[in-house]
Image (cartoon, rainbow, N blue to C red; front, side, top):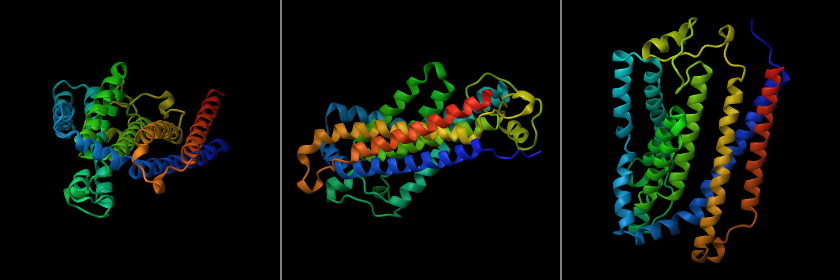
Length: 325
């Protein structure tokens, strides 16, 4: 029998909408600040470093941002664990890595075409800086960074699987992403946007699959009552399905899980804006008087993110309290 939605469900849904709006506004303010105040001076600075040891090292590191470095091993291991070793959990972990890179990559590719942003090389060679929108040529698909998307998506997915060593893939992903800025293949905002998009996409994918009983990184366990699409998915990809009491899904619903992901996004945006403030202070001497930074933007965005984080934490705590009762 279908259960009626109570006031707690309605509150969670409204709070989800609120934290979503907070994240969207915070994200666009973050990109606006970077593109207006930091991207050009940082790109010009990195152009002056061409030929240095740092740029040469970064040129080698950035090659690992190609998707095949992650997809080929993951696909090979998936075949091994699915059909030879027959380990449902490990085969699903490989599938999760592939899906994380693929889904975030599709989102980033669509945004590249829509925004049509000129790469730093166009700024250096022709002096053009900006967005042209709906361009397919490589020199005008800078935003967001695809290499960064691959590295961060793979890093976050591996971190969710390798809980004990989760910081290793995350740090490696950040190093690869940073190399895109150092070699002047992308602006800082391209890399930041791609990192946020990939992180949120992978976490949402992780929680949505978890809501339906598929959890990456956990020990092997099967539900004897798999039906319909769950059983079909398990048969196709060898995915383990988590057991739940009385065959029911966990008490924390999908809305609560998504609120948690949005909460993480708000925290990342807040940290990024503080980092932006430090960089802006560093490059302040290059700005014209008309480009001076409004004094309100940092306090306003910090307040916005704090409200979103606080609200989502409140809903999560309230939801856990209701579940205990």
